Image 1 (cartoon, helix red, strand yellow):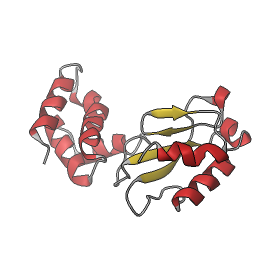
Image 2 (tube, one colour):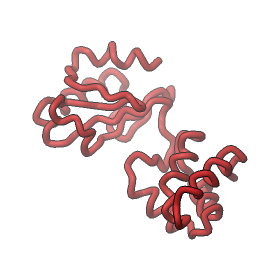
Image 3 (cartoon, rainbow, N blue to C red):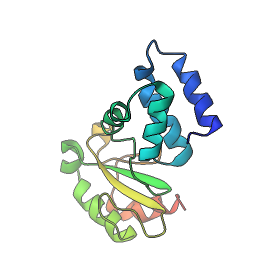
Image 4 (cartoon, rainbow, N blue to C red):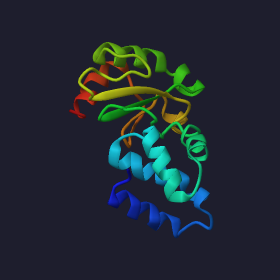
Length: 154
């Protein structure tokens, strides 16, 4: 069930759109901001709040890689694997993150601290390789500095 705060935030977003369907992505972001991810139950609740079917909401939720449909860690690492980042060393970065955290792409550390997800592009090709941790973009990365970087997200 949506919380009162989530319901109010979604209602506020609805005022900005001519049709409820246009507010689906914002409603998904609101729920994810409060819960960390969007469960099947949340999809059904959002659908009910917007007078849509759960399938309509889910089709939008699964279209966006930044809407998490399963639980993720407290910090989400998006490692760019576009051509530019790949050429500039994304694979060694992924190997180093995996070695430091003991996880591979799509996995979450046992303590729930980090989830590592590949990302098609972060829009920082001129500063490749790049990754985001939460909302922070990190560029010009080298494997030797990753341990220090990850420690900032204790």
